[in-house]
Image 1: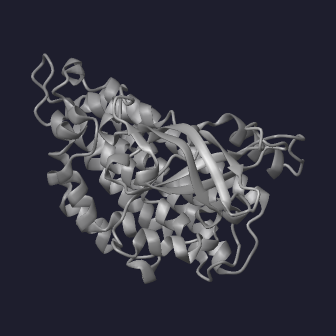
Image 2: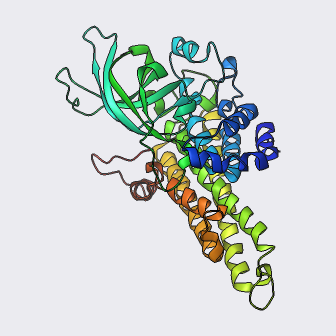
Image 3: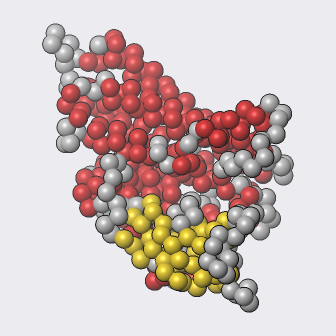
Amino acid sequence: MTHPVVQKIIDSGPALAETVDESNRSGRLSDDAVRIIREAGTIRLLQPEEHGGIQVHPADFAEAVMATANYSPSAGWITGVVGVHPWEMALMDPRLQHEVWGQDQDTWIASPYAPGGLAIPAEDGSGYTVSGRWPFSSGTDHCEWAFLGVMLGTSEGKPAQPPRGMHIVLPRSDYRIEDDSWDVMGLHGTGSKDLVVENVFVPAYRTIGSHVMGGATGIRPEPLYNLPFYSIFPIGITSAVIGMAEGMLRIFLEQQKARHGWDGKGYLHEPHTTYAVGSAASDIAASRALLIDTVTQMYDLVAAGQEITLVDRAIARRNQVSCAWRAARAANDIFARSGGNSIRRSNPLQQYFRDINTGLQHAIHSPGGVFSASTTLEGGAELPAGAFVMM
């Protein structure tokens, strides 16, 4: 059964599609697109109920992201990225939750998580002084707070050893958005600009360590909030890529109705094209099914009180990465059969092509370490000393 929020997005799909050009022209998500997303409630899907959230199964969140990206790749991307942040905020100090959601329960929170600065601890343990620059802050123009990844520093301003990362949370007044920092080939409408922080003090209660995001913390009783960070965060991003691929297939089929070959026959009767696109459609559907199944399996383990092992995590990440690449390859196959007019800037297929392949470049879609780790662990061996794999 389709979740009501997902159905709202589907019903608003044509209107959302009308916002794509404006978002891409301006380099930020259009106000109309933001309104549609807010009215549907997609950013609140993983938000705790006591703070106005909907608190759904993560599979419903994935479905909502896919539906959004189907009609607007940039809106889908922002939904997948910004929509995860309420999940992490649910693990934070209640004082911070009140600061963020106390006045407006539909407050959006930006990121990025990749470490872009150092956090120098205060001698009295009250917090950290932070400076740095963070690229790729998707949807940041519409957010009032930001999660930022930092590395712990020393009093001399150098990275602490051994390295230790954490996330901090800052209000909009504590960072600067670099408006001229987002000039890219795809997903231009996400407005994923750089954020700059200069010598800002962050209270300790506005920070969260990586050990908390490992899952099964018991901070909250609900299974949703005991999933590991890397079982939740990648879902939104990969769902966006799959949704874009579904959108490309939808647009391709619409366009082929009016497309004819030299012999006068419609391309929907051309066997080489229909075979290739049918195969691609199957791969997109398989990517969707595997991603939903994987996150559901992880959720079910937590709900049953079972441990999520390192092997479970590695397999889940392998599946998630594989889904993104499989859907993107399928979309590229569809584009290759779209004809010469597909390269015109007025044709949405070329925009989807660029957006999909841009989304594939996110670090969470890097297959090397994840694929290797899953095979090593599933085979019963241990990872090499010092191996770093996001899982």
